[in-house]
Amino acid sequence: MKTIENPYIPYPATVKETWYETGGERCIKTFKVVFDDEKVREKWSHLPGQCAMIGVLGVGESMISISCSPTEGDFLRFSVMRMGKVTQALHQLEPGDKMMVRGPYGNNFPVDEWQGKKILTIGGGIGQAPLRPIVEYVKANMDKYEGLTMIYGARTSNDLCFKGEFDEMSRTNDLACHLTIDVEEEGWEHNVGFVPQMLLDLNPSPENTIAITCGPPIMIRFVLENLKKLGFGDEQIYTTLENRMKCGVGKCGRCNAGNMYVCKDGPVFNYAVLKEIPEAFA
Amino acid sequence: MSAMLLNKEKWPEFVGKLAGKNILAPQADGDAMRFAAVDEGDAPVLDYNNTRVPPKGALFPQTETMLKFQAKGEQVEEPLPDRETVVLGLRPCDARAMTIVEKLFKWDIDDPYFVRRRELTTLVGLACSEPGMNCFCPSVGGGPASTEGLDLLLTDLGDSYLVEAVTEKGKTLLSETRDLMEEAGEDALKEKEKLVAEAEQKIKRSVDTEGVPEGLPGLWEDPLWQKVAASCLGCGTCTYLCPTCHCFDIQDELEGFDGRRMRTWDSCMFDEYTMHTSGHNPRPTRRERTRNRISHKYSYYVDKFDVIACVGCGRCSNLCPVNIDIIETIRQVKEAL
Image 1 (cartoon, rainbow over the protein chains, first blue to last red):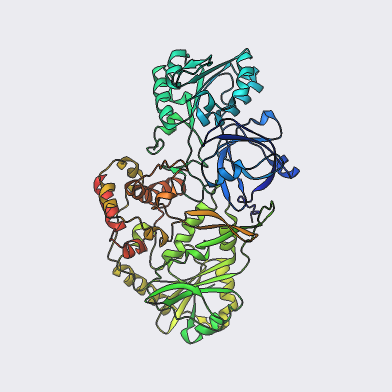
Image 2: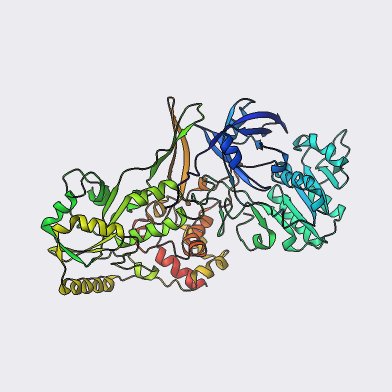
């Protein structure tokens, strides 16, 4: 008989640090948390692209991207947009408070398979959260990759996440960090324009390159179009999907896109697979 | 172990031997039948066609507490099921449905609540002699005396039940109760065969599923979905009463300082089921939801688990308030292929 381990049990993690990435009604707050139980900490292992169910007992839980790479240390990071009941409750957490965490869930970006290649991430808004772990992972293993280019945009400079990290990034030799915002702003020194257009303007060569995109559906649609224009093959393109989830372990039914469960078969999909799923961009 | 005969006069004694266990059996509830706990000392008469609500709740309750905790607490308790249960007289289609759902609950990561309940539950089935008007189990891999999922199968031979053990669990139950029974002779087995053949004859409806699992994704934009969904009220009856529907919601509840995280049956026919917090809904209308319900049962589930997630019990057709009929829907799918 199999030993039954209950996948629905969340474990307490202490919030170590929090800060706001963006402001406004739908503000994004980042939490750095560490599991209280050493055994849970030791057992935990995740890779870029994976998610976790995080929440507050008595309120509920939400599936959120793990926005740090395991190479960064023995902690987890989540960047949460304040949207509904659970994320409201999460936003009230301050250093010292407890967050309940279970996971990690879903597949990951095939970072091993990508060794020896150039990595190009194209993100928009909160969509940078699942891309950030790739950037960090590749930075920590720079000798194994040919190079790293990051394109990231948002509506305004106030909607850009992880701003504090960009300065450092743009100074790294192998890393090109390109930022853009939709509309001109006073004091903005980077590009102005939409992410898909910036991609075309930068004109990256598809040769030996993997492109990963994540952001609002409309942005993804045009980024995919433009990647094709630039000559990228379907197999060179990856993205992540999101859907409403409850269980995280492929039982509760709701997160399917066609015959794929986003929580188990995803969230990371190669475009060659994804383009065959009719519901993928619904 | 060979087949046994249980005289119906001994039926109360048979049920009596199960004392101490949680016994679920079909019982009258107004003008319908439903599976309910049997009171100590009672022996429900198994004289029914099928229940309105399937007995899936024996393994997957309509509401189930997954975790208990204290308000503002950090530690959770998991109230895993611990009571032995016997389901008496369930129909072969409903037992088969449990094996189909089990594939998902054991896929990749075990669902401990379902798996534990399955281990603690003995399923005593009752072969069908009078199929309902919308039964079509043979079309989807079942039959009036299918033993798939059952531990013990009873066949009503008039004055007695023919009792056949299917699994080790069934054999154990049979050995505990065999002093109430006598060996079944050739004639009893022949009688059963005859009754089953007659029952099969009485099944009037059927679906042809050939090519459907592979073909459904290609009908994504077909007008048939709009047609089927046009009369749908989105009430979810088809899914709640479906023995293979397994979707659930998870919600937290606080009563004073006592909190619990529970799961409840959910339905893919509801708009909130897939709605993102942003308000975006990948399946915004009943057209997409109907398409998903049928595709999930007849295509996606086949891709993942190699079996159609429909046992042909006919409940969704019997009880749809606007007469949407799954047999007719699959016929339209076939036509559109």
